[in-house]
Length: 104
Image (cartoon, rainbow, N blue to C red; front, side, top):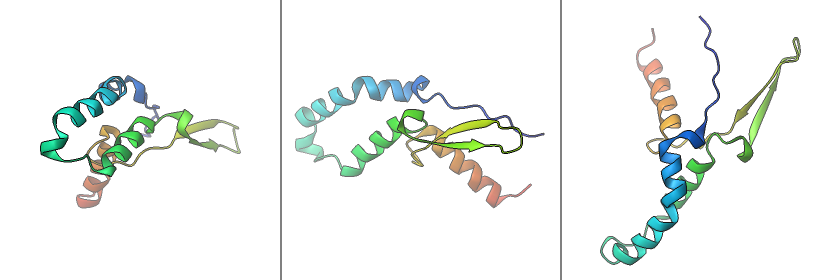
């Protein structure tokens, strides 16, 4: 049975909402309370969060697929491809690995 594509709604994700609402406050709090003992945040932390917030958002870029036969079009948003932080991208990678390890 063919799968039916269901577009993601990244802004509905609780993680996306928390990061959007509290990321700036986290950075200020980290600088005040934790930088002296834990050291500065690594540069890839900022890149990872920025990419996650743009992941799956059509406003951040997309591909347009067009069927020449029926004329149907579909937009596919770019993803961050971030494993371990982005739940959607991580799940996709886990499924790909599982298929490779144990083909049905």
